Length: 246
Image (cartoon, rainbow, N blue to C red; front, side, top):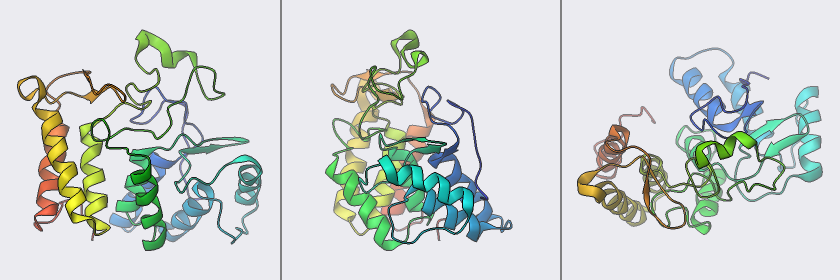
């Protein structure tokens, strides 16, 4: 299907149960194909949209893709977002904020779907209490997708780490997506809250914050927080993002 597959906990969200065809990884894969003019980028784009958002009326012809989408349509709920992953007979509907933002910024979602995604994320208040929560609905211990390793060291419980914690790094992508959608003032407000989060602990640039309390967690001195702030600031100022997102 011109999409990449992976095992659980094999991408940046390294204690999450996403496996098979994963939204985040395939958004990056499409961008690599687009940027370096690799073959079959159009096929990757087509299969990406049909697999991760199977709710359109158009049905794919490719047999394996139709089989997977039949399972999805039998149980998945349309919340306006791409599914976080699709495997044979099960999928992720927790709302992967980072993966959806990459899909918007990399052009996988056309204008209408991109506006739908931004609106869904806005309704979910992903910027509270800090910019931004990594999932819309954290996976809880009694959920089918919960894995024992998520509780290792107590790190990936609901509203923590990749399971609903707030990452200022990802907040930069939210500001970019808002700005691209025309919500310039809202994007600037996100940028201000990113600065506020980064400034805590004498400019500690903490890795992540608790998704309910906003308490600083993880490692100090995360340079990607600073980098994404500067990149988003340049974009909002009209100087270009540097991501190559023409």
